[in-house]
Image (cartoon, rainbow, N blue to C red; front, side, top):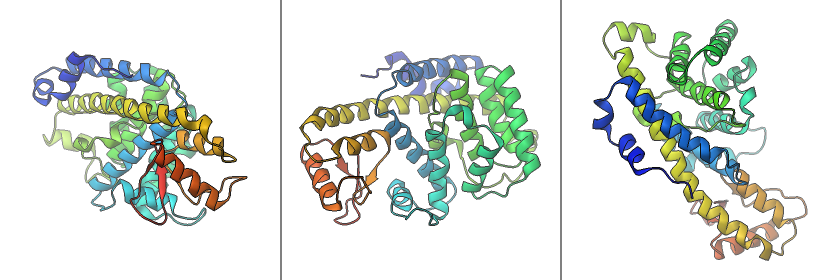
Amino acid sequence: MATVPAWLRRAVLDPHSLAAKQVEDIAITAGAAIGALDAVVRRQERWAGAWRQRLALVAAAATAKRAGRVEDEAALRDAVLLTRPGDNVGPAGHLLLAWRRLASRPAEELLTEASIARVLEDLGQAQDDEAVSDLTDDLRQLAANTASAEMLVGAFAAAERYGFGRVLGAWLADALLAQGLGWTHAIPLLGGETALAVGTGRPRRPATAALAAGAETEADWAKSLLAAQARAALRAIDLFAELERRADRLLAVAPKLRAKAADVVVEKLLSDDAIVASEQIAGMSDRGLRRLFDRLVELGAVRELSGRSTFRIYGL
């Protein structure tokens, strides 16, 4: 089981304690939380894909809420899973696609010009090829020459400097963290922190102007980001522990499944947030798949996530 030292959980979850600390002290606490998360990531469990994609859903829902949208996690999941391949998933669905991209693409491919341009498209932001190129160069320098705390602040500053806003800053910070720690895939963390007021639109004024106007000091902003990163790391670890129990149950009953291609279904459940009951599985009919899901629910190995009698969706 993933565990977090009691002192670390107290330090991270006590906002008054963090507010009274200096940036350097909060950086140490955040570093400890990221260290605990790193130990979880390096276990490379078979169901890590489902974990990352569930975190991507959390990040997308928080982003949508901050953007003034009404879609919750269930609606976002529907927008992507119930849309036929090639059809438009809508603005809310594209928010989820942006975070799913972070969780699914190899970490080393996330900060290329093409990848960032695709994310901006999903976020509904106008693209400026020169700005994307300059941003990519800045991120490369951040990754090569900056300590972790400065890298975190620098990712947000770079995104806002080119007018892309904090939602991209959160996405970039998560990607930089994964590359810095040598993870094969990024873990969506900061997008789920609603306290950061992450939205999809362009900022009304550059971050430097906000600082000059006294909206927030640079030190206060650094403390907020580090505290958010620490909270997000613990939230990810807690979700890891929860999904571990569910995945263990699924793996325990998997040998008892006699349906053809059941092993393919199990792998899909372990690698993604959810799949629809109408998923096309080679060698399995729609009726056979529905019966398999009914059996898995009966065994307590998966859950039906939509609450509907039709267009059902299943996951850990």
